Image 1 (cartoon, rainbow, N blue to C red):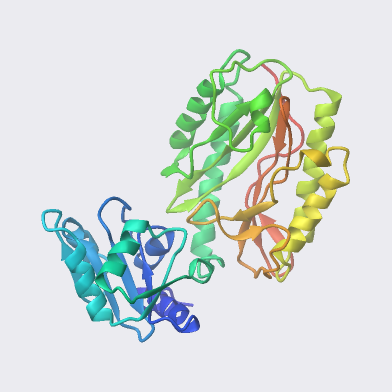
Image 2 (image 1 turned 60 degrees about the vertical axis):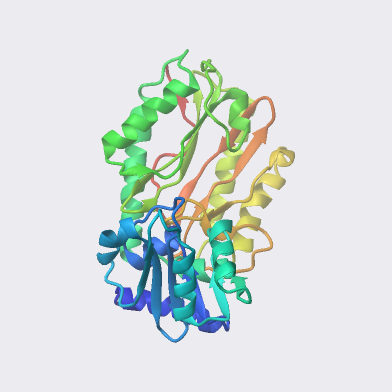
Length: 368
């Protein structure tokens, strides 16, 4: 299977036809990067790629980006604009060329001022949200995509191993976070997939905690949720440790989450639905003494975005094909006390699944 610019553009033309739209409009973000094979910033200067159902393409490009845009090799008109004159005329000319009545856009990515500029250029324009259909083109990963994610995960796991060996009682969450970030880049990260979560004790019960000046103490849970980025693809890993010691009840909570994580691995295969994976995982938590402490779904897709389709949750009956990569990250969160989350990055295969993450998951107490 080839993967040329023409091939990728043809996929978006297909989405337009599928939705009875005249064109798909993309703005900088994961889909824009996927189709152009170049990374353009999303900032105050609008940048739009139009891919028509009939195969025509055109773009609105800030003038200062023209030389970079040349590297894309797009065979279609470019409507550039300068800061001094503004971008509205470029939108008028762009829409005049496309001659569209209906366009499909990424509802989670397109910003309001770009929407307004489109409507000002063509007041009768119909804009439909095609986030699901557009993002679905990224759901099945290529071998190259998986290789990049595997590299990002390997870098992340190396950094985590180095970080836990450096932890000492009395270090703050913020200090540990700084050590982790330094180790990520030293191990070869090209960027962070997202700002890491390093949370101890009661802070670990907040699924999206921020690091504090709290100094870790013996018996604390210590949760890491983080990932490197490599060749544009993300890792997303969570491991929970205990510092110095662990109580019997905390160990039981941990092992309950570990069993739920294992249940997700066990049922995953090509053709299973996102609903069925989440049901298998969440049922383990619900049937434990700790069901009241469930706060999150099982996981989400992973790729150029750290959160993308598919979303692994009850009610999502989407059948998942081989090549889909998602996170299996059950957790239990006891307010005021601790949170435990164990997260793997999994690729679905025809006969089952493969965990791209290999960092040990058995309960580990950091001796310090």
